[in-house]
Image (cartoon, rainbow, N blue to C red):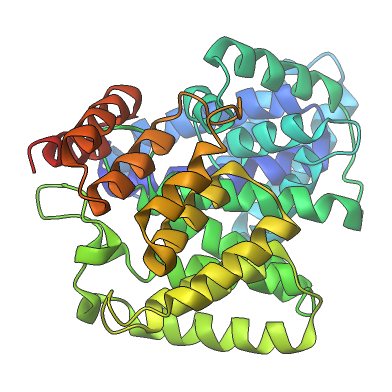
Length: 394
């Protein structure tokens, strides 16, 4: 299977699944049918050529798989076949965007707990593996597999209830999908661009439907401002390049301009939320011509606001770096010392990596190397591990 076909199938999968679940319910059965249709496409399309309506082809094949499963109900089978056959000719990508969003909201069904909502959506819509989702939640893979299986059973046969109370979970899911694409949590690749671009596409659709929601706009702005740096985050051989060493002349200026304009407008008209604050921080970084030109006092102020709005150990780690840039490395070290007893990050490689960075800034290079080594042992991302190991010999 060619890389182009594989990328297309990954992009179409949630749209096809959303369509089938909307029509037929039974999440598990629809998911199995879609997987069989994707397998058939991966074999047939490279050999026979791309169909004129790829989504319609997949919906038809998956629909036939479902009707085979349900052949004991002849009347029902005939209705489904007729429905699918009627729509194949005029199916295209844009007509199924809303079905993808409907699938997002189904995965965030109120019957599910918040962790299950996020996990199921990452699996069904984001295409992340169970191992990747488990890493994002810092839980064993077996635990996450059980959680996803229980979530599927819980929403089996559920409809597509709409409700604003699920929007925060939907946004959090999109945020996690983007983050997994921007910095892959495991494996040899630094980035998975198909995930970041899909997260941006879906967030644009949510923004189109809810143009006045400040946090939707804030999340979209954050994604644009962060994704603008993608071309400079790694070398030609895939090695990680930290923000301070990136060639800022190669950043995507159009994405930066769009993101800055969006967050500037949103901050002026909408109630303040965590995604807007993160977008504002990203804008400060993107607008600085050099690392030295960064307005660190403003970044620190924004991180303090973020810590009040949405306390989170990872935000505290970033605030420690900003604190070090404004008040010196020891002030940053004092701040992260408070996280040593936090079970959410105790033993996480980022805690060791940030401490090592601040120790380096403080001139305590030998001590820094030890923490860089600890961080390298704990990360499962090969580019990050290699970067941390390089720092031990610096």
